[in-house]
Structure formats: C-alpha cells, structure tokens
Image 1 (tube, helix red, strand yellow):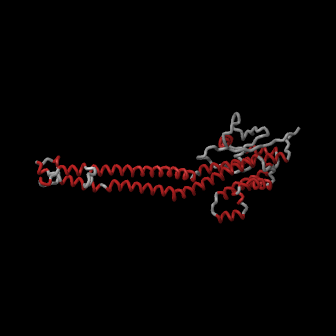
Image 2: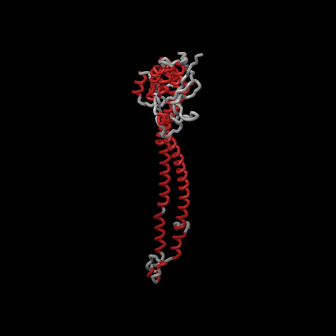
Image 3: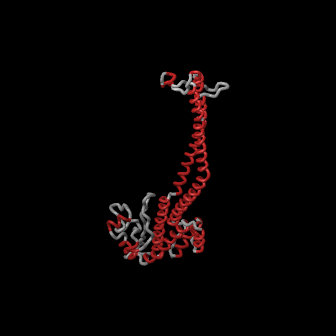
Length: 342
C-alpha cells in the first residue's frame, strides 16, 4: 500500500525585540535552503534538520555549526521522494519574497511621487489591508501554488503584516503628535514656567534696594565708633550726637507699617515672605505642568523611535513567509499524489 509523504518547512522564531538578526529570505535547494527544516507526515524532522535528542530546535546556527550543511541532504531526500518539488519551490519562493519586498517598500515610503510610481507598478495594495488577502492568494495561485484564502499560513502572514502596519502607524502618529505637542502645549508650559520664575526673582529683587535704604537710614541714626570710644559693635554713621536717635534707628529696622511712616526692614521682609509664598506657589504649579508635559513628550518621543520594535515585527513577516512556502510545498505534494518508493 502506497502512502503519501508530506514534507513541511519551518524557520527559527526570534522573541526578543532588541539585537536580533535579520531573518533570511525564503530560498530553496541544497545550498540555499539552509534556514528551512524538513519533516515527514508525522512531523518527525529529518536528520539534517533535527537538533539533538528529543528534537529540540535550537536555531539555524546550531544546524550549521554541528552539521555543516544545514538541511542540505534533506532537500535531496525530498527531491527523490517528490520529483519536481524543488523546481516548484524555486518558482514560488521569489513570489513569496516579492510579496514582502513590495509590502515593505510601499509601507516604509512616504514620498508621494514614489508612491505614485509604485501605484502604477501594482504595489499600492500593500497600503490597503482589505487587499492583502486577495493579492497574496492571487500571486501564489498564479505561481501554481494551490492555496485557500482561509489557509492558516495566509491568515498568519496577514496577521504579521498587520502588526508591522500598526506599529509603523503608531510611530508615525506619535512623531507628528510629539512635534505638535512640543510646538504648542509644551512650549506654552515652559514659557509660563519661565514667566513665573521671573516673577519670583523680581519679587525677591524688587525690595532689595528698599531694605538697603532702610538699613542705611538706621545706621545714620547711630553714632560712629569715634563717638562710642571705638566700640565697633555699635557702628553707625552719625558724626554728632544731636542726630543720634536710637528710637528712629529701631523704627527703620522693626516697624511693620506705622501710620504715616514707611515700613521698616521687618515689615518689608514680612511683605516679601507673603509675596514669595504666592509667587512660589504659582511657580510650583507651573513646574508640575512642565513635569507632566515632559513625561508626555518623552513618551511620544519613545514611541516615535521604536525602530527595534519595528524591525522585530518585520522579522515576524519574514518568518511567516516560510509558512506560506511550507503550505505551498505540502499542497503541491498532495495534489500530485506523491507515492513512496515501494
């Protein structure tokens, strides 16, 4: 009794966003198809594609380092069991790779003239998710790959495209919102903060001369050291005793607003404390707004520059391309009723 042998392909999946290597494009054959694992109907990997006991897949680099030929001999095995499979693969693989290159070239381009040229070349489908399924199936069907629009590999490929599409949109929107936010709200908040800071400085500096004048007036009512037997602790500027007036000297220092008199140093300082408290409160409010807006700006800037995350989603699309090839090869073998060698 003859049985049908079905070979499947797979590739290494990278989970980390940062510092991951770019996934290779889909290729076929003993020399080129080293990133593909081949297995039988029961999903038992062939020796060249298997890794170690238990068939734990550690990645393509493990195959290359430990076997040296990748899945090379497995391709030869498949060609013996399914004549024409590699020739078929060589026709389908470029179509699958072209799907990815068209998608990325259109999605990653913002120049309208280039987009117009791409539209004439039939690449604009990439920018319209509603056209993805029909385009993928049509191109594969034209390459003689019998595949359904509801095939899991097609759905998975579109899902990975949607991740990349959404991430690119997310970055683009964040980039625009960041610039608008910086020009409008963030700039206004910083200007308001600087204004409140200037008011605080003016409040502090505006009374400085008043205090200096009051201190000088107080000193003018106290005798010089010469009149006090050189007692420096009571230093003043009055050169004659008839102008010495300790009560007035004290008023200049201690008065808090006697009627008909200017406030003394203590009164001025009291007013400064009140004004400073009010100005400092407004400054703190403005500072909190700047802090909030700075966090918002930082978040938008972070999203706008998530290039490593975008590259990771690009690799997910490339990985899903191997799923398309896998199912095309499987369907090729099914439709051609490939028997074993019995």
